[in-house]
Length: 283
Image 1 (cartoon, one colour):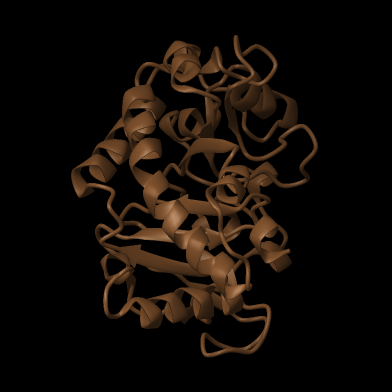
Image 2: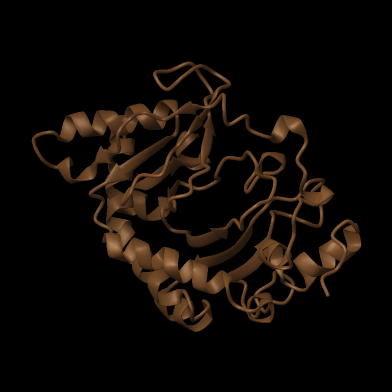
């Protein structure tokens, strides 16, 4: 019998401590969003008023060719203004991206007890963390998501510690995406007047992580959020969307993408990857 999700302690134990996550709550037959997940109105996004990102993805296959300078300008313009852009012909095989999505679904479909072994307070390795929301112990309103986070140090440790259901595909994705990341950083650094030596790029990409977020079907999506407003701390975030969408970016300054304060939806594009400029590059 499912616990009462109207009781904060009962909900917390079921979702967080027992490792059932939001998925377990939805699978129990949930018909309304519990109070603990209802975001204050200021944190919700008015999707009907948000702008659509109308710029086409940037074709990275043209870097190094006769159109290199124009493509570089597109990357820099998007990075400086919106901080987000989509890329195609990025060198990561499309079938690998589809496998990545499939294995993510496979992992989150595992029984709670198999996922719960990686909870932050019991995980056998500091490299892997499974959880829900962001910091559920402290948040006033919880986020509608479950996640698995895997930190990369080297292949041997990843093969030993990452969950076997997702490690091989995740490692292959990490390997094949690094060439694209280096090309993007080279363009961005050159725009700053910096000669991008390999040693400098090595420092910027030293810490690598693969995160998978899972957003179960929500009965009242307008009342909550999957991930609240935030910026990413690192250098670049490479985001693979599924076909559902739901990614919104807030415009910080007036630009060709819209007016300051507006929200822009980044719709999913088949085979494209979303590039998010992190705090380190912005600084």
